[in-house]
Image 1 (cartoon, rainbow, N blue to C red):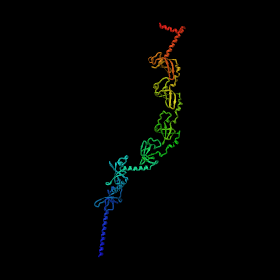
Image 2 (image 1 turned 180 degrees about the vertical axis):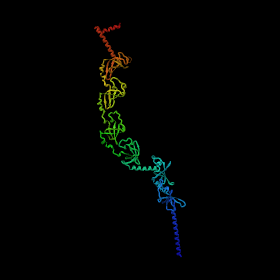
Image 3 (image 1 turned 60 degrees about the horizontal axis):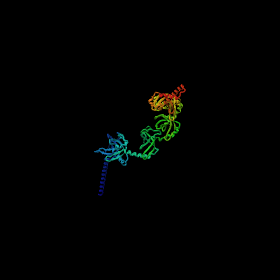
Image 4 (image 1 turned 120 degrees about the horizontal axis):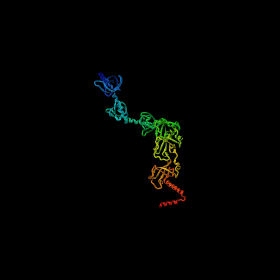
Length: 573
């Protein structure tokens, strides 16, 4: 009986165990076939029905994903049988399909990655999808990220809003909104920090003599700035070319790619100076070999300096023409224009300023040497009056420069006050070359020298004691001026006008004639001194002498004493 009871118990245990196992399997199957929100599932596409994509996820019911979640650029590139992974977001009631989302799953991954980047202060890639008056709406994967207007770019580089649309930029996360799972970011902060890191690395690695590649960023009149990546290098205009650079804009343009050599690195101020010409040999090193002294070189005028012109013989080799080497005639204003082609003879080299010294005039004959042969001093020339001044007349007689007839060389005897009364521009005149002075570049002419100087023969023409009859030319309180032969001038002082004191202006007038005796000739002062008083006294003496001769002829006993007695008697009577 006990055995029976034991068997019965065993049977009950087995039966109960079978019932428990059946319940467990049922519960397990039910748990496996019951979807839970937030679970991640994997399955295969079994059907694409309109805007729904059905996915077999191993449950009693299938999952549905909206077709829009598969679209990229408007196209959904999927096929039946493709495997997908998604998150359960909802379950339809009454045994309906399970609602799935690929984007929600991606959002969770993106959100976690965003949190990690924020904690580690790492940048994230944000795609700009929209903008408004406050800023730009972006996406980090499926997470919404907002960028304020003043954080989209650095201050000097902000562009129009359309420029940033649909572009991806690295940004720094500024703030996390865990409740709404959004973030605030700054592209500007990322640019500043990354630029600073690149800049520090650049100055840590760069050395003088390095060759770098960059692009021309800006051009100034004194040089250019070259973008070398994290920094801008300064390129002085004198380091662009070995030749003269008047303005960098003639050789460079903005955005031109250039290769440069590092000339100087200022680590303290984070500045760098670069050069282009230093990448090639200095052409000045071979200038003596290519352009020896006495050789003839040619080039184009580059610029005008204070004491000459700069000529570009070849790129990097310049010559200078001093003003005194432009022409044999120093007073000649030789003017060269930029771009003029000229030739000159090499005189020497200025190594300090790296300039060849050349001469234009040495390629022509010195006209001063031929002038004296063609027109020696003392020769007579004919020419035209080209200018009249207060001090003389300039005459063009075919020489390299005009000759000057000074006022004092017009006449031996006349004092010319106004040369315009004698000459007009264009008049042809004849003159004698008095002196040629190459050093002072002067040619002196004379008109009066065509005739003999009458003052040299004045003592022969007007010997002392000679009586002349002259026309009065001027009367003043000091005396009377008269005209003499050969256009000589004479003067009669007041004391020599009469035996008695007279006022010249009361007694004499210009144009009248007067007789006088030559007293003295002053050749140095070119004047003849005359006397009316002496003429009268001499005339009286001559009259007395003639009168006495009459008495001597009538009575030999007549004497002066008798004559005086007779005159006394006449007075008494």
